[in-house]
Length: 154
Image (cartoon, rainbow, N blue to C red):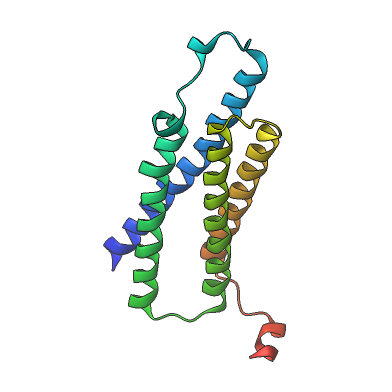
């Protein structure tokens, strides 16, 4: 059980680190697009399958996310816990997965050369990821009790 929990924590760390790194790459690319002259195509970073953002997203972040979710599910099944804090954590992880999908859409926009509002979108995603990660850590470490209004619904 301990090795599954360790795998979950390690892959979650890799996933979130990569999810924070990719928007930084995209924001830098948008900044370069705004500041460099259009005729300097030799300075352009590669697009498509050769881009660093796509590589980190497809070969680091997404496999780590899949492993993290799988290991977290295994921990959940081994412990057979049905606590409120776990449902709250899973809700935040769902939003983390939605953020991952939005990150993929930003990569596609960058590869197509649509850099309008790219920096703002990247900062928004970084903020979303940070808030979700802090919320997940707070819930897991604090394990808050079930609120009274939730118990009345059950």
